[in-house]
Image (tube, rainbow, N blue to C red; front, side, top):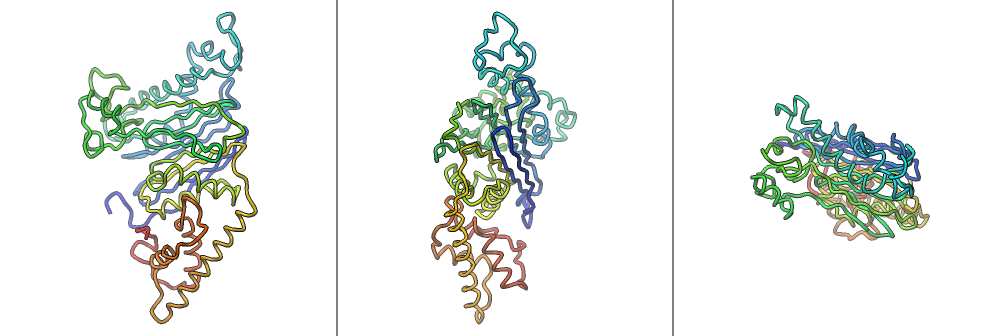
Length: 404
């Protein structure tokens, strides 16, 4: 199947953590792709003076290999911190949050960095790690042509710094609606297209030189060798966009970071409403992230999938009513599957795809917003397998290639 497997790999990597006033969960799945090229970072409390109450989360979506994504997941934060607190930075990083006057005396080493210094440090950190990786022999000689997008959030006690380079995406759910989303860097975007053309390239079939689907990324050195152009003027730029927002503790609920394997099949609003509905049913953030990944697989995503959910203190809480309604929905679906299979004894047992299509035609009420019937596929499949234990799997291993 070319770049795809005959059967998706559905094993997941999960992690969770709590601290610094946050809770997070994450889930990643290889899916239909022949290789897992995603990576991620989750750090509660940064190992830097004045930043021990800060946290950092990121998702990296690799392409043409996983080398760049994996390296960035381990080292990008170090480059950002080093750039923010490096040479000449200790004095320039003080002031706005501490009220100190750096022109009269050296600030204490524990003072937190100022907003503009952080934004500059993030940008510099990206450029530095991109230049550093260029020296790796396999990347330099073209033996490895991998690249990676990067989307992240740096949280201080007072601010949210959203970071994006490529077409992964971060969204903030505030006051029960999507308040902010990063902007995807696609070659067709006018500003991106202008840079590509100024570097002697072209945009064909919505790709850089008809090949690469993103206009900003780390790595991808085949697209960063135009003489006379700086690193941010190349066909593909490693420069991130950084968006700073003041935290609103009474309104901020959660942040979602995800690669395009998630966003290909769910909009910002759909994903956030689905996450909200799941948080009202379970406070297990790994479980919620697993449900996101499974739902996207069943909605038809063919890519690697990774999602990081960061819950802020005002995140939705488990509701007894929501738990009851979810249990009732599961029971209803189970009974409908039992009914369909019992009625089909004479005609032969329908396959799982047929069962799902029949349920879709039922217009099942009270399905999770944004997730729909796809989010309940595991419930449906469990009762189907229980009632039909000796069924023969279809050609794709029982997985639903076609989302009905």
